[in-house]
Amino acid sequence: MTIDVEGATIHFERHGVGEPLLFLHGFTGAGSDWRYLFTEVPAGYELIAPDLRGHGRSANPEGRFTFRQSARDVIRILDHLGIDRIKAIGISGGGITLLHLATMVPARIKAMVIVSAPPYFPEPARAVQRHFAESMLSDEERARMRQRHAHGEKQIDALFAQARAFADSYEDVNFTPPLLSTITADTLVVFGDRDPLYPVALALELRTAIPQSYLWVIPNGGHAPVFGAGAPAFVATTQAFLSGHWKPQ
Image (spheres, helix red, strand yellow):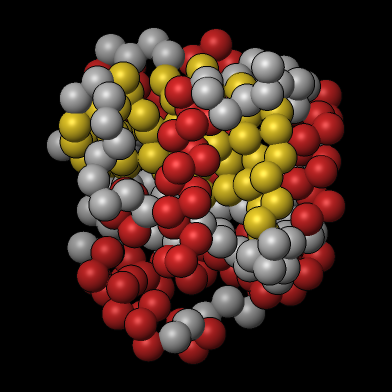
């Protein structure tokens, strides 16, 4: 399915039947990445998985990317589908988009899981962003990029350029404690304690600032440590959290 939002065509998938569950992929990913976590749509949910602006099958004619704009795109999708309130999972850049959603329209997010999403970009991450290029990826990661992004090499080149621009951007990803305190959603913050981009101290900042939040630090976990061998534990924990059965009474 597609929707036109502020000059761009945004693609999204819908799977399953039940309570709406939003999945937001990481930067350079695509909505279909949910399949790397779930072997099937979680029971009792309708999964809504957009390709963020300029990713996958979504367009980005302007060429500039912000997570705040991605949040506005998602709001338009929810409005289009008539969804007032939703549960959500955001991975890395998708988690940043989700933080924007939760601060822009707090009442619309009932519960959320944010994975490896920082309140701001620390200097070590900016150093990586400044030189981010395809040569930094494995052959497998390069192949996945070409499978994900329907608009070819120009689209992929644009994503690398946008990632490099993050290094000098300070306004888009700047979630202060007062802003985070406006979040009303039950929030599970998930971080790896060996994340090379975002130190686990940032997870503690999120946990401290977001009122109804919980922290899960994955031992020996890198960036987005919920894929591969980590997927089964993440799926079980996430489903329990979103259903309300995980939280301590």
